[in-house]
Length: 427
Image 1: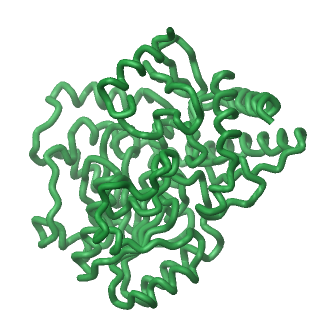
Image 2 (image 1 turned 90 degrees about the horizontal axis):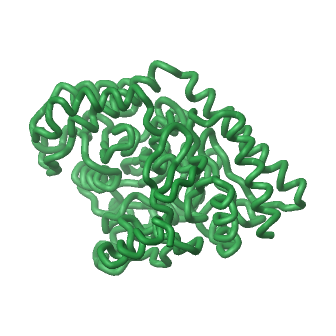
């Protein structure tokens, strides 16, 4: 028995489902999960000595590839001074200054410990600021596992077949209104039906958790206009897109300024971290400056801040990173499209910058309903065929893939070859 299989068998007796996050279980793609031992640059290495070309990059943050030397050096320097203080540090201030410089809509920011914590706090702040209780989210968008968001959720919730999780109270569900992504008319109807009750609209400006789904032209601006007209706060969940699609995230790329922004992953260089920020008048109601309570012993952890500062400073000082990510994403998706033409296939591929998803459906994918037309058994076979050829994909149809600048043109060509061979095998 392989080492990964032995570890999984043991894990199932100790950890629910054998994993600490549902999508890792491989239930959607068959087989058992691969246990990762290490990673460097564009590669993952598992417990059995296999090497894989990495196309998840820890679900987004490893823009520069794994174990990027300046980040490693920053962590090595920081750990000499202890791991946690539960008290203010210089690096928290430097991180806040850097974020507010890179993301123009963010005038003040609060550090937390995860993307889930960031979105949960942002909703509380929006409710406190507006004095309203309800929020609008979009079907298939995933904002972490807080109760308010597990209504028509994306990512692992789809994969596990429980988009509305047991344990979420009916009262909580009543305050969360859902609309199809890219459907402004549906949003307008929800606002009209709940006049003066909606505190915020929250969305992934480019969705990563039902696969990569792009906003249609005018959709984000339409939401901004509806929020302005009805005194509703617009929240961009940029946990995946922040500092990846552009230095200032999706909001820079699309030219839309949200009221609040949530961030995660990348601002810790891949360490457990998150943040939320936005307009000064909104953020000024957060305790201890204001009455909306939110706290965290490990918030602004000095090791995570050190890693994140090294990462963001490099991105801020090297705009050519984003040019290279665009080149890699275009080269890969053009190659996949060419292979599909060659094979007589017409599957949908959504792509923006360094994010992409190949959907096993011929239907264009612009919302959750479209994404669910994908052939999931076919995707499972495709996933295994790619894994066999040394390419590590997200083990779910409903996830975006994320590229890093550690990938070379030669590695991209290897992925294109593997994709074509995998499609030949499974079709």
